[in-house]
Amino acid sequence: MTVEITGKEQVYKGWSSMTKVTLSDGSTSFTREVEDHGSAVAVLPYDRERRVALLVRMPRAPVLLAGEPDLLEVPAGLLDAGEDQEQCARREAMEETGVTLGALTFVGTIWSCPGISTERITLFLAPFAAADRTGQGGGLAQENENITVVEVPLAELAASADEGRLPDLKSFALVQTLRLKQPHLF
Image 1: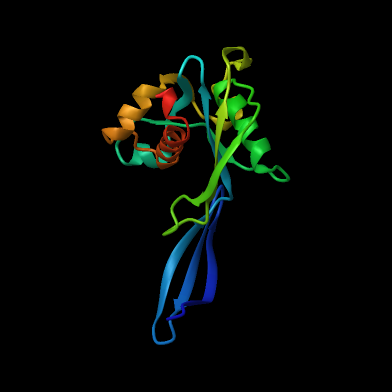
Image 2: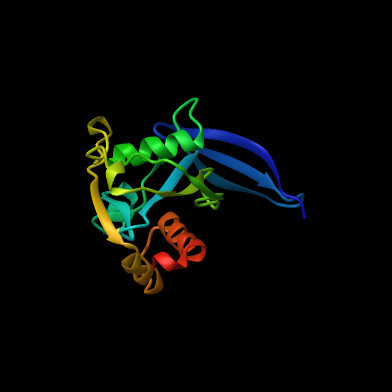
């Protein structure tokens, strides 16, 4: 059975946009709302020598709305106009954690929430050394991110994933990928 878009109407435009989409399977029509705010990247900076990763703790409006105070997650952000995924990963890592990244390992590009959003996140792993912590991190003041940089032992991240205490999907995917590719670090 083929489903086709037979109509669309933008119902909101702001930081993100919401579009009402009419779909038809040939016998029935139905509507869905689709949120769009652009593509994103996420990166897991990890120190091989000290066996730690840099994550950020920050308040997120949906998480707050769900009754939780903040979220521990890998550095991530939206692509700026004209920016490629690697540039964005390096920029976000510096802004959020103060680390200068060298080599990036591409993990994949995933749909973050395909039932409601057009967002696709490109995932990277990135080794760093203590000397690469050249900035303060914490995000940009004009973006009101309220970021706290958190250095977490890789073994602790693995235990959190195993115990269901790593609730951010992009972070979970990157930790598990690093475990598969470099288990000796854990």
